[in-house]
Length: 542
Image: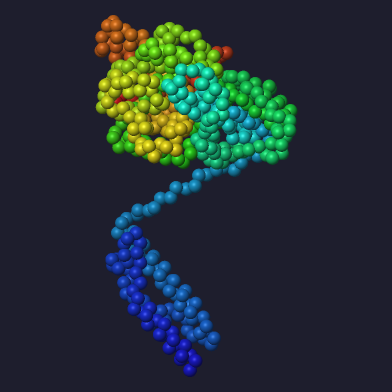
């Protein structure tokens, strides 16, 4: 009777289950639509046929067997459905990005701790960071994540400082702001993915975010030994002169990082610099995503040229280049140059500097140059720069020839730019990403961004970069403007002068003992470049 009773309850329990139709749905394709799938309900007798024969004491296991059997049937239905889907929609699969591979750390005897304070703008600091990692690697040091510039004019909030001159004629006020701590700029973690930086280089050099507590206490007690390494040094200087100081002090701080390594070093050092620059220095996810968004907007409308138009107020004041400016603007730029204590050169002859090819092109000169290269007037011109001195009025000549002028401020909404807009280095990082991906990159001045981006584009496959010979170009422009050259002659001369300055493979020029005259390593890192020769001739541009 007991067995009969249990059997009756079991049968009652299956009555409602018998009325339920089990259906599978995967990616919106229902199981009942497949000819090969099971469309009927799961019946009591089918389930019973899958169960084991009864044995004494087996009744207590029936609920578990029921659950197990049901799960097996459901899995069978899903398998049938997936097989049916594969026949219906082909071999489409969902792709998952594998997590980045980080090599195991390199085992070495730590010889000390290197702290660095980077100086300059975004790209000067970028090159400096690469050099510091290479130095730490080959001296077997532990590198503390670099601190970024917050003291010189070129720090992250220089755009805020520059704007003060529009509202004030008092040098004293500007000096007060420069010497205060009113502005805090971006640090490494705000621009680059610090965790990726550390992990991706672990097989070469140990990098930490902070000094260990023991050393922090030691520095607080005894002070920190600081030094600016000698510019353009070779590795022998670091082995013989710098390394003993780590043995003595354990912790050493480099107060400057710009050009502290020479251009021509052993190949293993060069490859280490490249690895840091092109693989380890990845921007933060927020910057990367916003950069991709700008590129996507531009690509939807066709090819585009990035114009690194260095006609900002700070650049003109620093360089003493005032071509195209009126007398009021000349006085304003001169006042700014004298107000910045870090800028040593005060008396500058703008005319002779321009004729020597040492000035950035004006917007008018830029328009003439683009036309000389036969750049399509309909092409999108993305301006990678800060605020152009003189605003839209100064840009009018360029816009007349190339009406499709855009910049990140016109392509993105204010809400998109808000997280970055008060930090010039983060804004420059967005321009850096767009500059890497453009069809043509043309800088109007040979500053750090122009140099570093050109080298990065070479590394990515010799993407076209027009490196202007401003000494020749300015002479040709003046000859065209005064009527000595007709337009056809002028255009042909410009193209001929730049036929070998398009970012194609070349050997760095070396002048032993004269590093400033040499080709910059980060402009042409030939030890790390692909061997494929690629590039469009001038006549095909645009």
